[in-house]
Length: 141
Image (cartoon, rainbow, N blue to C red; front, side):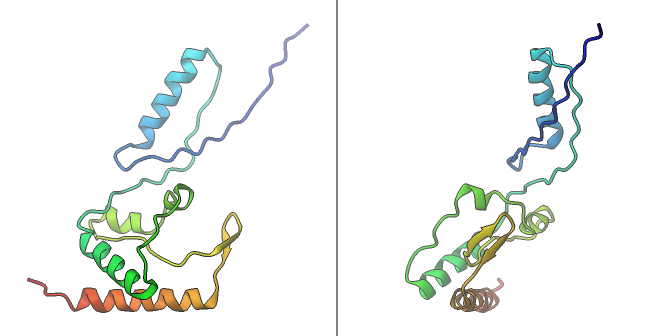
């Protein structure tokens, strides 16, 4: 009688800090699986590197002041599920272009969709316009 083997596919979503590379994560996972004596195949099929923003202090300062002016309160930190997503700011920060993420919050209606009220969109447009005016008006010396 022949022995049949089952097959199980497991997909792991790993969020890496900027200083960690996908190959490091793969190596660490392989070490754990090897210790378990499992017969496995591993493929890394997508990896997006995170990057830490450098020299973003003027942008952060402008965002904080403008937000406080418009909304009368401090910026609320994002929850980890929203803050850990990969965005275009990573591309800019990878190239050394200071970039931050700030925008309107909506009501999530599915994994990739949300509804945002019109008045919130208007406030976001005001925020972006006032930040641009603030940043462009600063002394360059």
